[in-house]
Length: 341
Picture 1: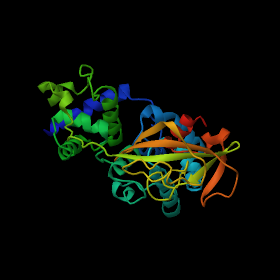
Picture 2 (picture 1 turned 90 degrees about the horizontal axis):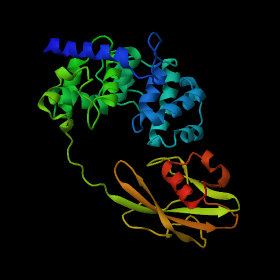
Picture 3 (picture 1 turned 90 degrees about the vertical axis):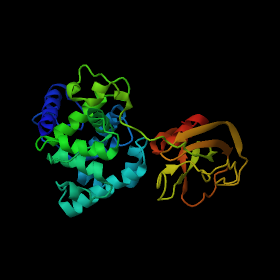
Picture 4 (picture 1 turned 180 degrees about the vertical axis):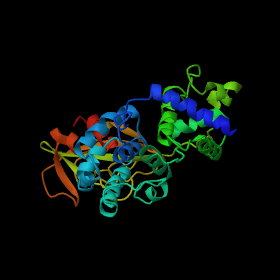
C-alpha cells in the first residue's frame, strides 16, 4: 500500500510539473514562495472562484503588498476592497492577523501548522495550506477539490476517510506542490460533473473509475432546506445624496457601510422600521441574496427627504460615487435595482 501511495504522489507531481496553472499568487518554478500571498489567496478563495479572485488579489497586493502595509490599513479601506468576496469577518481577521504577525513575529509567519493555527482567522485548513505551500511542511491539505479527488481515488464515503487517505498519500517532500497539484487536478480534470478521466494521471489508481461510479463521490448528506428571511431596504435621498448607515460591529456584514434596513425576520416587516419618518413608497421589486444559513428577500422602499440631522451612525453619501462606499453585495444589488448605481 505504501508503494501505491508513493506512486500516486510521483505521478501527480510529474503531471503538475507539466500542467500547473499560472496563478497570480503562485510562485513560478525557481521563485521563492511568499507566505503573505499564499495566506491571502487561501482566505480570498474560501467563498469565491479563482476567476473572480484573480484581479481582486492583484489589486489588493498592489495596495497592501505585505503584512506591514496591511497592518496599517484602515478598516474602511479594507472592507471596501473586500466587497463581494464573502463574509466580511474574514477581512477583519486579515487585518487582525497582519497586526499580530508584525507585532509578535517580526513581520513573518511562523512556519509550523500548530503555530499558524494560533493566529486570528487561521483555522485548520488554512494553517495546513500555508504550512505546506509556503514552508513545504508535510501538512495534509483538504479543500473541496482535494476532497473530491481523494474520495474518488479511494471510494472514501466519509470526510474522516478522505482525510485519512489524503494524509497517507501526502509526500514528505514537495508537500506544497502536491497540495497545489491536487487542487489543479480537481479544478481541471476531476471535476464535479463529467470528470475527464482519460487524461487523468491517476486514472489507473482510481477505485471510483474502476467501479464506474465517479460522480457518486464525494458522498454528500442530504441538505435541509434553508429558511427564508425578509426585510426592507430604505433608500432615503436628499438632492444627490443617499443615507448610509454603519452596521453593528458584530453579526453579518458587521461594521460595513450599508443602506438602512429593518430586522431580517420570518415575515415581511414593511416600513415599520424605517430609519426616519418620511413618505415612503414601496417599489414593485425585491432583492434576493443567499447566505450560508438562510435566504434573504428584501423589499425596497424609497423617499425624498429634507436634509436634516441623521440618526446616530448615519451619513449622507453622494449617489454618483456610491460605488466607492464599499457596500456589501446585497446593498449594491438594491442600489442598482432602485437606479441609484
